[in-house]
Image (cartoon, rainbow, N blue to C red; front, side):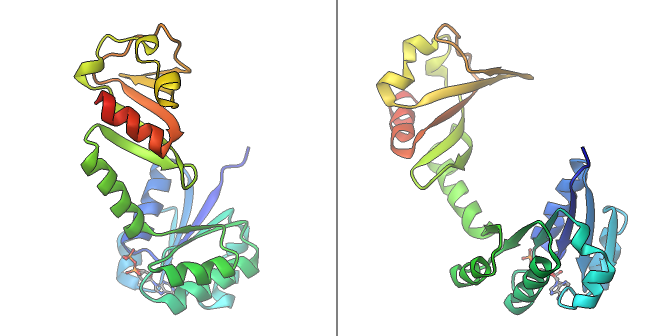
Amino acid sequence: MKKQQFVVIGLGRFGSSVALELMALNYEVLGIDRNEEIVSDMSELLTYAVVADASDEEVLKSLGVRNFDCGIVAIGDDIQMSILATILLKELGVNYVVAKAISVLHGRALEKLGVDRIIYPERDMGIRVAHQLVTPNLLDYIELSQDHSIVEMKVPVCLNGKTLADINPRVRYGCSIVALHRLNNIIIAPTAMDQLQMDDIMVIIGSNENIARFENELM
Ligand code: ADP
């Protein structure tokens, strides 16, 4: 299968971080920024890095942007430029367009342009940090909907040696432990007899309310 190719427009803090991580994951990345210095700093680190104005349709066409599977518009502060670059990526037929929004209104404008995924980096990171501050064992979480999440949580000392049958999370708390990470292993769909060990990481799915009950009563 052909590997996905990504074009990242705007190599500021967010764009460069996305681009570098995609490179680390072994994908091809074209980075575009109108700032020469930024492009020169990134040129060795990305598959291609080009100085260009992403609001110029002819330039985007000549760079073959339409052939990329995914476009990431990482321009934040300059909302006008973010919107112009987004319209062009959509019109050129880039299959999946992700855009960063710096405010709710910016996000709403991007939504109206048919952006496939809108990211609010500051807002999302703020929410994530708040969750981690109030639940020290929480490592990460993914919101499935407004009410449901998947969370990754470290097994606390008090659960060391307990089996899933002892804890019975499905019946007692209405949430399920769907996987356990132990060192370099991952146990998918652990059974009732699987024993938890301190520092295992539990992957828990459920409603936010039930996950919170599970955390509060057991941790
Ligand atoms: P961050 O907060 O992630 O650093 P910024 O909005 O500050 O995001 O940075 C966005 C980047 O996008 C900057 O490097 C800027 O040079 C670049 N940029 C802004 N407008 C354009 C444009 N029309 N074409 C290409 N790059 C642009």
